[in-house]
Image 1: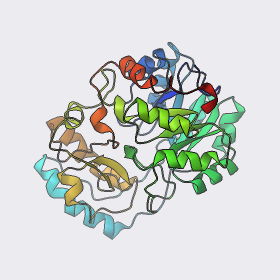
Image 2 (image 1 turned 120 degrees about the vertical axis):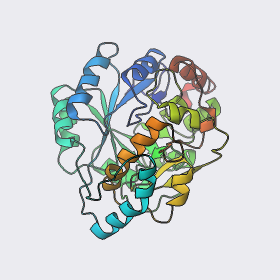
Image 3 (image 1 turned 90 degrees about the vertical axis):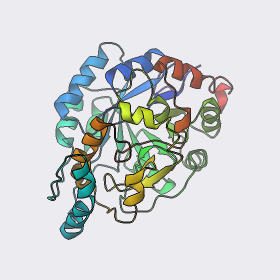
Image 4 (image 1 turned 90 degrees about the horizontal axis):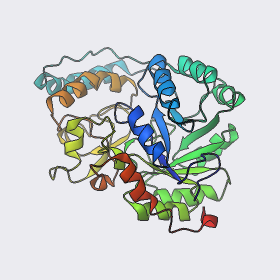
Length: 349
């Protein structure tokens, strides 16, 4: 059984990029060995650190991708930002941290990452948070890289196809971590991933990687049956032995205190799905729309919370299927999920 020829993997499964620590070279290597297509998470890394990971992973597998955050330089509402910084400072104080009320906005080392990936190409680059306007898509394609754009609606899919991408990552609202919605100020439609895949499949025959709401083999089977070329797995790998997920985050995924996920801007200023904890509850109404400024503001708080095991002040990114995450080697998780691929005839994919 093979996935879409573009990915050239034994099973149509993708190890989703999880920035900030969970995705490691070891996790990518293990999922590749199990037959899936792994992505490295380029977000929040320097270009040098990312290219070092690329070089390391290339030693064990030639088939992998890199995910990049498309930069969104836009002005920050200074009074609004400072008010939010003051509101959350008591939470930081409880952890022994003082926050910087001066907004920081950056491009996540975008230019250097594109330059590095043009000089040392990888098979696939996926884009999150929108579409670049600087010629990056064509520059990557000219060196043989296939470019995928992450979309959350048919409208975004049409824009991405118009920009000339080779494939789409179709992200439903149930996905964990940041929503890839292109306009960070827009409301996220509560689209089920399988329905969104079917809607987008009707407008294109390009490869579609389905992401969001995957809680086991039956979800994989359902997404493939609706037209996905492959299915991305993120939350279900958070407890994998090779993942870099923090001990606090790992424990929260099985802690009975956490009973649901919510979409929140409280930690980064951009919508993201996380376990509902004290921080998401207390700042649901005060959170502001300002990414990446809020991400940089809360980073010291989140780092301290992780170090101290404080799961009530930590960004516990998780999709709706988080209870199905297993404390196992990644190879066993991929093998389990792959049983959902074998139930479908090849023609259905």
